[in-house]
Length: 194
Image (cartoon, rainbow, N blue to C red; front, top):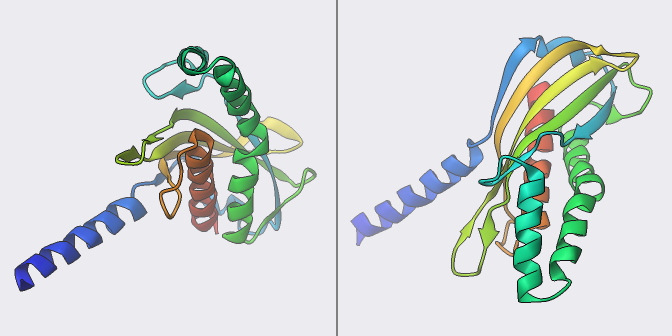
């Protein structure tokens, strides 16, 4: 019985550890301390040349999912495709910014000296069908540029494997899982830059 309990506790620790440390942030160029004395930052999001799941192009993913959902229920795929694009402006950025601000010493302002450009490179949307699930993940390139001269890059980071899942596992909606990945990315990037 003691052996079974110890095995169970070890499994829980390993699960928590793998979830907590899955995300990686690396400096590619520049010095992360460039923002040390800044109290504000502008944040922008880009989704150019985005790959999604097994699709190297976002448009191919949208087309496939739209057709799949429309076959099951006419119009459902069209609604899903609209929501997919809307989430990139109305859902993902606010979740990222909210936790970024809570975990760093900065607030967002359009007229800040520096702009953080969060360029999403890939999204793994994951799935949740009740009996089994896979977390969403995002990978991104993060550039910190001078707001007045956006060609002047002062810091370049890579952010890999930001996981997205809801705490209680009720993330049946693709947007919910991905939104959680952006929230996690904002939180961890905020801590990293602080």
